Amino acid sequence: MTAFMDAFHAERQAAARAPLAPRIPHTVRAARWLARRLPRWPAIRTLMLSLAGFGLLTAAAWTLHIAAGLAVGGSS
Image (cartoon, rainbow, N blue to C red):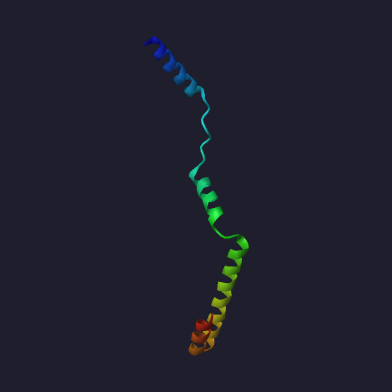
């Protein structure tokens, strides 16, 4: 029984001395996950500029006449 206890304590001490793996914060994990799944910046920029342009064209047509605003909004 003493050999078993000595082996057990030796393994527990070896495990206690082993260095722990560095922790990765959840924000870093989330940023890495988003970086793999979101589109690249040029695609996002193109989408935002297109939406803003269509929105401004629609707003400009709406100031001229309601029917023009509806037509431009429908076509865009």
